[in-house]
Structure formats: C-alpha cells, structure tokens
Amino acid sequence: MATIPDKIPGDQFVPNIASAKKNMRKSRAAAIRNRAQRSALRTALKRASAAGSPEDRLAAVKLLDRASRKGLIHKNAAARHKSRLAKTAAK
Image (cartoon, rainbow, N blue to C red; front, side, top):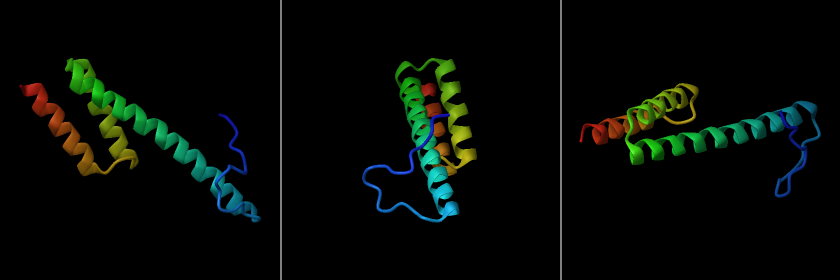
C-alpha cells in the first residue's frame, strides 16, 4: 500500500499528538479507499443499466450488497438501485 503523507495541501492543521496523527492517516486511507469503491460501484451500475447483460446486473447487485453491508452506501439506497435494475431487466 502506498504511504500517505502527513501533510497535504489544503489541510487545516497537522496534529502534534501521535494518536491524532494516526487517526488522520487512517481517515485519509479510508477516504481514498471509499472513493475508489464508490467509483467502481457507479461504473458497475452504469454498465449494468446500459448493456443489460445478466452477468453485469449480477455483478452490480453483488457490489451493491457489499457496499451496503460495509456502510459505503445506505441500505435503502442499495435496495433502491437493485429495484431499479430489476425493473429495467424485466422490460
């Protein structure tokens, strides 16, 4: 995994306490990871709605379930997306 720098341009402050520095590193790493996962989820949803192949829909549903379980998106949002996918698949 790439190292996350202590100081990033635009930061309000850099903490002096070791635990606060660690929390900042952890939150940055989580934000980067969440951004990547959210992007992958959106791409899968676009692919599933555009192409409409069963494999793409299945992959999107799997990603939605995982994102919901991990707290990346709200469970009702995941349910809404899955419902819309199923609705377009039924047409």
